[in-house]
Image (cartoon, rainbow, N blue to C red; front, side):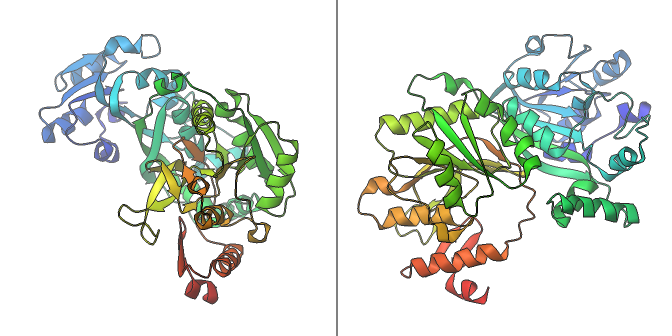
Length: 455
């Protein structure tokens, strides 16, 4: 146990923003992390919380203040308010209700505050080995520490953080790579049978601990008055487990009682949208990937923003969640900048909204029944949302230009970022459709005629 209390998590230390004024550390042990941070930032006020009285006494010699309490038995808000950073090192897995703690912490940080935590990955190969062997014996330390009460993978950790008002980003990892054994090879093959690419499977299986940095997402803005649009969700499904683990259990959709229309066996985005729209009850329809998770609060945010567009009479253009807009000073779209918000697999894509998008990512697109542009069936599953933007740019009416809003969705994709041949075929078709464009910007990179011809 002494090693646990005396240890220093170097990667967790590196993830803490520099020059923080007030820091609260949950599970501060002997105070070594705070002591090291204060060596470089002597003006920082660092408070610690520790359940072990002996460790708390030791930490008090190095930190500005230490509380010896059980964080699941105390009103956390009584420990203080207005922290710049809250640090949690290898603690969430020991809690019975980590989500309750995470939610309480959201109210304790200042606007712009950060949460930095270290979380073990229970999807590591060493745990899967025991599951397959049928012997989940606990250990004195490690991933199967006998004091762990909750298990996280990267995806489940991100969902828990998002549902508690935190916007996560995978800052770093501790890795124990899968040895090239026959068992590891079979597990990778099993992942591929599920539709998980080899590179993604190996990344998940070798990840031992996650260093996650989070921004605070204030939910108070969701209480603002204004029209909230009812929404129909149209989701093409070809992988049932992705749908069931993500979109189907999204609290953001449940909180607004969104109509969810599952479409199986569609051959294109256009077909899926047409089939779903035929039974949709609401004017706003969101065509969304099966691997998208709507966290708590996101449904209210979406209904609020689409309701505002309805009140303003801005229903003629498609609405995206992530994409590109012309860079400042560039009216042609030749130079572009990022727009929108999404937690994309492991990274936080965090940019402003836009009312002049030149490209939209297909992960989710809201289209009103009165929209002036339509999905081109020839493009299949790729680049159809970018085509909606280009259709709008060719129309004389300004209202047809696509928009991008900020709603924190989690794109929980297993894709390994390799573009399939079907993407290149769609790129060829898109370039042929718009001969006046020498190149078309997308989040996957600039699509050019030379690239399309070579594909």
